[in-house]
Length: 290
Image (cartoon, rainbow, N blue to C red; front, side, top):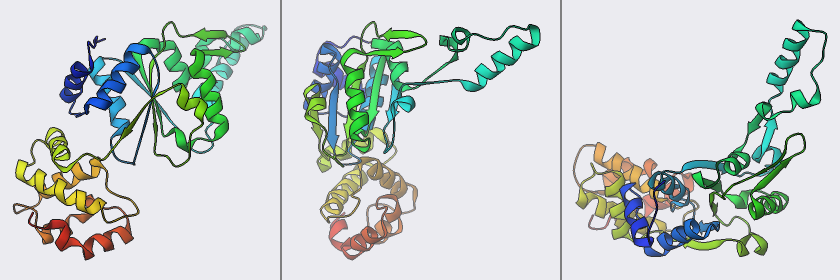
């Protein structure tokens, strides 16, 4: 694993992974690594919260373990389950060679466990980055359960015993604020809000992720995207859509950002029917002098 000396060093390492973190975000991530505290990242959908964990994993050489939250997720889907097929095969193999039946201890040993993200993170410890993605989509009960796991990084399996992390993994939680998280969870976390980047910063991101895109075109595109986000759309475009749009415009014939080229490739940046209509109505202002 790569040892990080300070937030500036982490910024440089993230940049090498084509992730441009500002000083505030780099400091929050550095403290998460140094203090062993989870960090909660909030912001609009598409600002790059999930990408933070991917870039941090690559920059530090730690394994990325992702727990994708959704409505109805429960402990068994996040912790572990038993490999019932393998257990049945084990029973069959025993009965074929002897009259003896498999005991409970034989059937519920560690070799029959199927790891889910939380158990995998406990076992990996500090060798892992645990991404708990979109925690706001899970219900209150799962959030309370998660709080217990994060407190000790220990999992008790009745048939096996308690599995304790030798050292805790680095934990990144993300939220789009579809619901308010409980104070108990927030108190245990460092916190950082990720904004949409300014156009010049987003142009840097586009060039880092899509170096084939001309610098002038990247500048025109990110200026246009900033205007699109000001249109109060149902689903404002995220940074990933900006990069897709830049690649789409770079791939079609012609140069520069014109109204016609913007309209031809609008499906790369706007993904809602009503939003497309709004952008089409405002296309002259969106493109401007681009």
